[in-house]
Length: 139
Image (cartoon, rainbow, N blue to C red; front, top):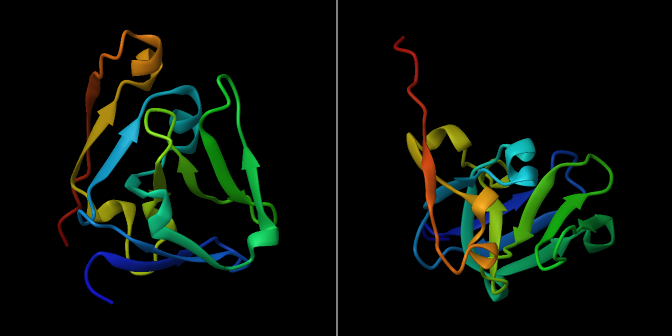
């Protein structure tokens, strides 16, 4: 596997997936109601680039509001694995913490999209709410 081909899964191991990130690993966050509560770093990739290799029957989906976004999680351990984006339903936002050998703390600076003022509710205007930064403590 090259640097953008990854394996991942949920906490209990019931769900496993493979994913290709054509543009590499670029993280982002969102301040909408569900993303704020999940608090995860999303890595976006085309829907066709993610394949469930184990546990498809253990995968549950949650949708709300417009019903466009679909949030997939393990019905056993509850970990959110990925979601289909409302702003672009052809993309999955993959939870960086669910990827093998990737940590959300690998990203020192992450843009936060203004999902509270979503482009589909705001004349198509995309806004940045701010930046999330992580600085590791010196040893």
